[in-house]
Length: 332
Image (tube, rainbow, N blue to C red; front, side, top):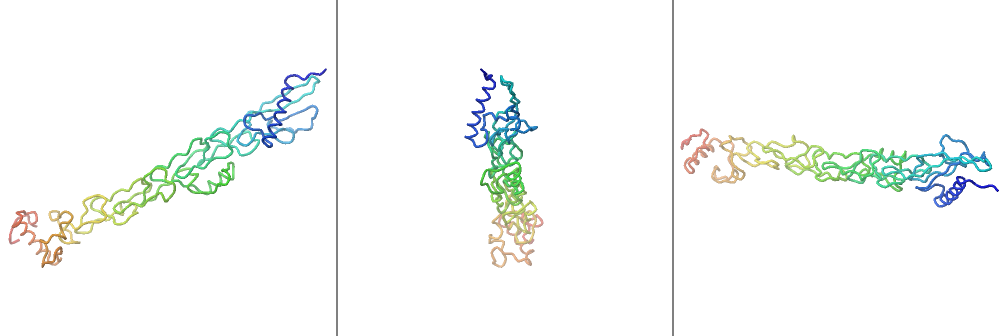
């Protein structure tokens, strides 16, 4: 009698297993299994159609790999029965898409890299994952979690990039909606006048206004103090040029001042360095007042005040640095 050669026996067993797998998976071959595509059967020469792609599903040619897998290497096979009947087919191993790649379609021979702003750490997946708020990814095919935005920045994406990722070659997980804090390909600098001290800024609200006495340029992780001799009474100021010079007759000794103090005898009137005093001296000391008005010196009496100042320094304290001429004179 007629005996079936081993290769054909193996093929029939494989076809039987193929049928069971297809029934279980629903018209596709699961990852790790072999997909078979008939090319020619002598008994049914018209049951399949010719294709340049030997592992193309359709018609009588078999069933492709399930989503999340690729039919990457297509191998030709053939066998002739003892009766001389020829059968040719192609087969491929359904390989899972590697991490950083996905395939949401059935019966494909390649996987697709996740786009920038997305990632996929697990093999054999159908969808990429958006970078969460506070992170970014500038490159395609990322298999690790997205990197944190550095201090001074926050994550922000565009609706255009989201549409490209979800409606063209790629597809997001079901039910995702556009969120401009997710799917970032780069981090956005905090605007001038604000700062962001920690990594992982999630959105523009992560940028905090600089406090009074300070300023910042764009992308600042911390605010810079206004230099001594200047002040800044408002928060959220951009650039060192927003630091205001102290008014005439006032000083600020330290960086980061919110206000200037009266350092000259008369407010709003400049004086020489030798007449300047520390904060709290002028405006509170009784002794330099005229006409009993504590802390006030009328501008039109300024010359009289200077003479009185010199006399008091000479007679009471024995110093000459309060005298305009630098010489102690009771009549000056």
